[in-house]
Image (cartoon, rainbow, N blue to C red; front, side, top):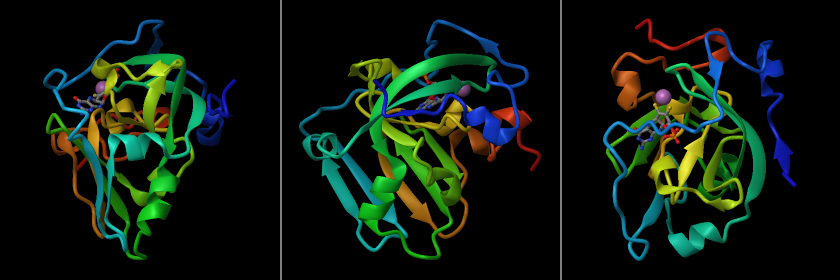
Length: 200
Ligand SMILES: Nc1nc2c(c(=O)[nH]1)N[C@H]1C(S)=C(S)[C@@H](COP(=O)(O)O)O[C@H]1N2
Ligand SMILES: [Mo]
């Protein structure tokens, strides 16, 4: 049923499926810094800016017509819960990077959301098939409290790297820190190394 099952991703990081210090939950808690924002599908737009040859902007119709993959992924929140076997469907990050034609000296990416949230990752950590712009969860449109209409998921990182309600990504030639990264959370955020807090 899924195009790609990435629940063995932990092997790449020489770890157990449940990362250290995490507990498994069947629920899917909602974690939002300031509640669910509102938007209008008529004017909703997703843009790609910064160190690219083609700046892009997609309407909802345009974005939802891009080729999608359905993936089985685990989800690890830095506050200590993990939810296994989420079926997210969406557009892999490399598809968008290719359409934007990222310039050679781009090294970093900042994701920006409707609620003022942002998060950052090195470009190399984004250019993975399992980093997806998700429009669906478990066969349904992604619920708005979980970031619908469009969110990022990052199963190789703590979930704060996955921006809900994402409407812009900016390619950068040097690092910029996102919302939680500025407030002391790790930039690297590898759950198998328990990189929760920054040592900056
Ligand atoms: N736009 C936005 N994205 C966000 C957040 C947020 O507050 N705003 N919280 C992050 C955190 S800390 C986590 S754990 C996950 C939670 O996703 P969920 O609410 O679907 O469980 O979203 C991440 N993405
Ligand atoms: Mo989180």
